[in-house]
Image 1 (cartoon, rainbow, N blue to C red):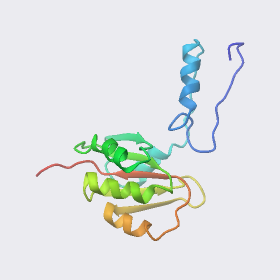
Image 2: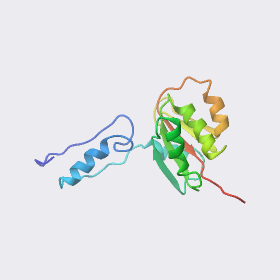
Image 3: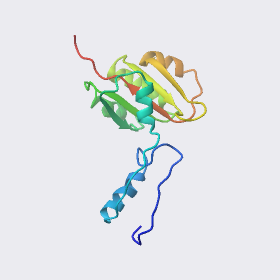
Length: 156
């Protein structure tokens, strides 16, 4: 790039630089005075919030939460009273435990679980957190998950 050659960052897992190390490459190029650009493509967070049927006028993308329950609950608590729809990425190995922590922190809010968006076996499940926990607890989970949780609606 410093010699004026064009370089492209491509990934087979959604838009580069969102919850992956691609941002480090962009940051390094900018720091070196190298101009960068992006060509938009599918991003799971945008597709998931649209398909969730939850409010899309304002949302907060939180990325991957911490792996351990205590740290994860503290991470979630930051947005406990946020009115914005919340979006998280989670692995199939921690998804149910993530949902249990979300239920404990946020209460039984409406949510959606989007799996393998833009792929052959794409799926979206919608319901209250407690309902999704019950459904997913007996299912073999595979692929990448995007979790969308409704924002705090407050009193009255």
